[in-house]
Length: 263
Image (cartoon, rainbow, N blue to C red):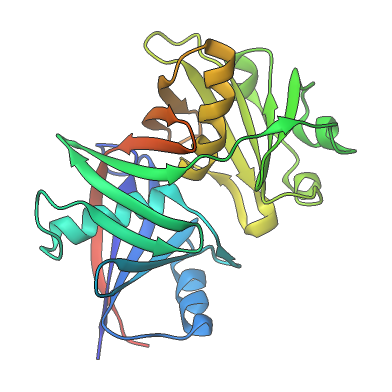
């Protein structure tokens, strides 16, 4: 039987921008090896796999190389697909079971709001080779559960960054979040995210990174709500709200492809 698959651009309202994710809504259990092969075939930063449970949707995420514990843009894409295909009621809050615990998605006008765990970071010594790999001098370095967070001096420094991905891949973390206070009107902070360790050179828009960025900038700015821009070549916009041990991420999504897997 053919397996439907949908490609969605997340954290954008314009096709061919934001972060693309493939979404498979399964009708039966599939083994991990098959899911990893599908993710490698799709070759997006993440492919999401959903399976209906009694009171929620089981949700797993795979890069082309590995299964990951948390992915924001593929969760946003998954919620978008469930509503678009009539698998969730228009006003329903969608609940997910994942390796990062219980997550949820709700509609907020034209935006989708994700409720994710906060991932606080703490000051850390820069690992050897970090500045050389980035090609920039860090203003501040912190370490969260998943990633290093590096603040640079300016938005321009973040935008102009051309890191050595092979060197970044040697660092002991899932990825590197690079950020700075925004100077572009309307935005509070900008970021970029690099994760060659898991097969993603530069991720276009990274919801999970903002689970770390939200508490970081809340402490810096003394407030809890932000409009953030991820300054990758594709670019993406997120509304971010820090709520203690949770982070609310809001974004839009656009379907760009529907197809079928025959393997």
